[in-house]
Length: 86
Image (tube, rainbow, N blue to C red):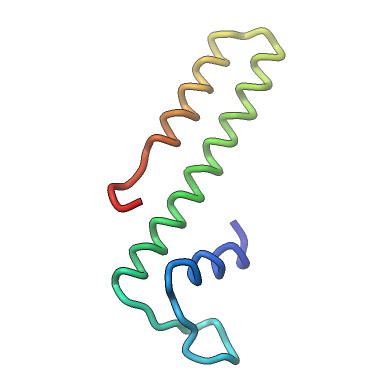
């Protein structure tokens, strides 16, 4: 996740820059802050699940079915791990 991703998520969550000169300071409601936190958490979960997806592909190519199933199970579990507010 980079700076542009964070700024996009803040905008998507409804946060508004205080000044058009700088996006360093924002005004937001508690609901916007919660939406932002949920977006960040979801993005991080997906990044972690993609690491597991790569392990699925790698272990499958090696013919290690046990490791492949473990990595697949981890990817699924990570994606299912959602906050009730997501």
